[in-house]
Length: 397
Image (cartoon, rainbow, N blue to C red; front, side, top):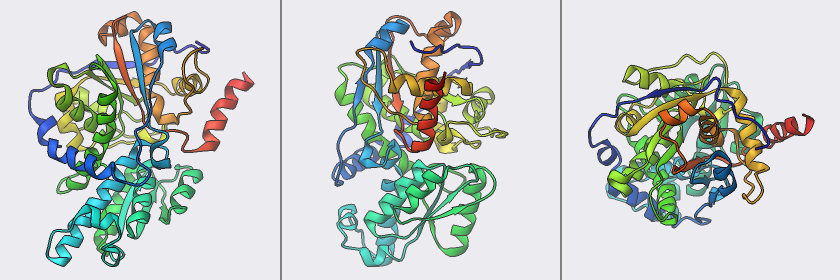
């Protein structure tokens, strides 16, 4: 490899999975099927690439590495395109149906038959960038006003991408969790509707819909593979991506579903701390991680219901592993397909490479030469300036 990925600083705890039916109960098969049927009808839909990194797999001595590249998704640059826009559409469906006193179809809203009603329903959310961009894009398509709350350290490039889709962007002081709190309170005061990918007491349906949308990505993966992977490394954040993917994989593969390894930045390790405590646990963020989409201090309780039954391992990685992983994908080993990925996309890749260079950690994670590892490349280059800076670091070395 071009750069070393030392396991120094990587932390790991094994987790004793609880028994239960959360993978079927929290997000039903019907919910996944409804989301898939709708999203695959959207203009611009196409399955994203599942890239096989054969040269890298040989280099670190595992059987296969599969990287699901969500960069091309609907031209929005991330897997979030599947969640926020769909959950927003479902909020519109419920509210328009309530106002009209009859059930309206998702397709009718998508096709503009209820533009007048949609124009009177304001959707809001907090975001580090990708979820808000998806919601803004969906609101633009479905004709609803959109307000997005971002915290102080969200890049201006990501803010401008949401404004370009017609959203009003409100930047606040504080961190992601502060932006969530403000979005909730102002929505309540003004009669707006929150479309969040995290849940809290009394609020769970939109986060369920977000996760159901992610099932489209999993269905594409399963359609492309001949057999179940042995492992899946999933980014943390509030847990929505990890929970949605883990549940969909369990529904598809049953007892053959892959071992679920949750990976987070050491600077934002709320799921790692939850794993240690055995219950949803907040993490006080003192410094922002380069992996902006994973900078979350409050786990989603809804996501935790699934992860407590599906996750076998929780891992944190230090910041110094992120940029080398981005560069390795963009300038890969000979024979592998180049992938331009964002910072939050490479958490699993960085953890995998580091683990294979530490014999004890590899054994603890069950990683050997027969491992077939699935990685979710959750975003492409969603901030060109940050990507350029990461690539220039290697050029200057």
